[in-house]
Image (cartoon, rainbow over all chains, first blue to last red):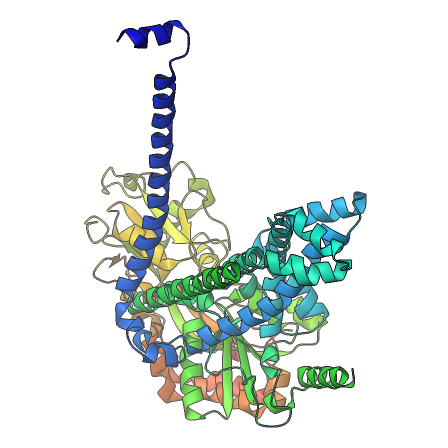
Amino acid sequence: MNTMSTNIQSGIDYASISRKNRSWDIIFASLGIVVLFIAISTLLALFLDLAIRGAPQWTNPDFYTSFPSRKPLEAGILSAWVGTIMVMLVTAIVAVPLGVAAGLYMEEYADKNWFTDVIEINVSNLAGVPSIVYGLLALGLFVQTFGMGETVLVAGLVLALMILPIVIVSTRESIRAIPIELREAAYGLGANQWQTMAMYMLPAAKPGIITGAIVGLSRAIGETAPIITIGALSYIAFLPPSPIGGDFPFISFEWLNSGFTVMPIQMFGWVSRPQADFQITAAAAGAVLIVMTLAMNGLAIYIRYRARKS
Amino acid sequence: MKKHLLIGAVLAGSLTAQSAYAVDTVQVDGSSTVFPVSEAMAEEFGNANRGEIRVTVGLSGTGGGFKKFCRGETDITGASRPIRPDELEQCKENGIKFLELPVAMDALSVVVSPKNDWVDYLTVEELKMMWEPEAQGKINNWNQIRDDFPDRELVLYGAGTDSGTYDYFTAAVVGKEHSSRGDFFASEDDNVLVQGVANNTNALGFFGLAYFLENTDKLKAVPISWKGKDAVEPSKETAGDGEYQPLTRPLYYYANIESVNNKDYVVKFIEFIFDENNGELVSEVGYVPLGERVRDAALRVVADRENGTAYQGSEVGVDVVETLNRKKHY
């Protein structure tokens, strides 16, 4: 007791300061857990609600292999999930190389002047542009001016434009996070700039770049507005032609020019129907869409884990 | 290097070649109200023509559908109201001629909660008192509509102002298309309106007949009296024989005449729609099938390739056969 009071008299009570700090830690940690819990339980509640309401449909294998129908419980998502995967494929093939190249250029090659500043501000701004605006752009440019039609290719391109800023920003961030020593070591060994980029910087930045790309694609998979704007179909009872054809050269790109529908559009159409059974079908489609997004995120985490290990 | 060039050429070639993907496809788009009819027809037509003719249906809305149709991008567009003069102008500019065909009848139902025990019927004048722009902020109580109604708050639900349903309801009730009070609960999703009215004893709302028929346990339809006639309750029968007026409206297909002339599969699809046996499909998705006289008149318009519209704007309480026999203007 006596020593304690001498401590207070000397002006510094270390025990009380550390106790106070520790209690702040505990408050902050519990606050963090509460926030995390709210976020996860919201997602879980949403998913469980959809899964339970949609159970009669998503547990039925026919749901995945049949086309839409006027009969609520015979309606399936075959054209929708195939369409979604095809559109996502185009989006990834266009957005990832373009975004990574742009990010690399801006971070490593471009001079720092007013011109690159303007581009940088624009890229950040584009990330915040509402998706419907991209839809209108694609309708005016791709569909009407270029006459490309309402196709898988156009949908993939508009979603690629939409997620391009996300890919660019995450590429730049992950390149910036690489220790300068790595670059210096490469130059020290006599590598030129391209060799340094391709052989050292990009592999080191890969986990971050992949994460950014998947975050972008996860945003794109649930988009309805721009896809409806460019004129995606709601009822389509056939699949786009297969990418692997019978004739030489065994690869066909006709599927790019095909009409299509995607998961969110089907769900949107079913939610507004009068028959109560369509709500079951819509809920099942929603549950499947969430699983598709989770699977994509899971894949990203796995790839990142593998990349970090090697 | 040579190998790369070859691959490039193959890629370019496959991108441009569309020949193998030339299966006959009828392209339908347009109103979300007409969509269930189009979907049902497309489904059965596809089944009947196993893979040889395909039908695709889009969901651009009546206005969006006309925009594409008048650029010549679709064969048929569904509409929940007649073509507007500005849209007609657009079609003319691009040289798109069309057939105007009814495909089904829809009855706009005025509904209240089953707990509402005071409304036995309403006249169109009383509906007008509730919905006209002047009512905003003033007509807020049921007893302002009729003296023997109770002293209860009046809560209104209606279709969103972008919909053809809203346009038709205001034309029929207020007397002026697209004009009503602004202080009501509006939603583009009719299921939201159903829930709203079902859960509020003081509420009154309107939407398509299908949404009432699917929810008869949660809603009560109000019989409507027009021009001093007896009040009529909405049903497939009263809408079918034109008794439920002025809230029965035809739903339309606009078919591109060039498509009809040059693509025999488009004609096949139109004939399929007007086939007597397929009226059942219309009924199945909650609308009222056309009677024989209407079907015959519509097929005559197709046979004569009669270009243009019979309307100068939304009309209420029309006799569909009479409009089909009118001289069209373009």
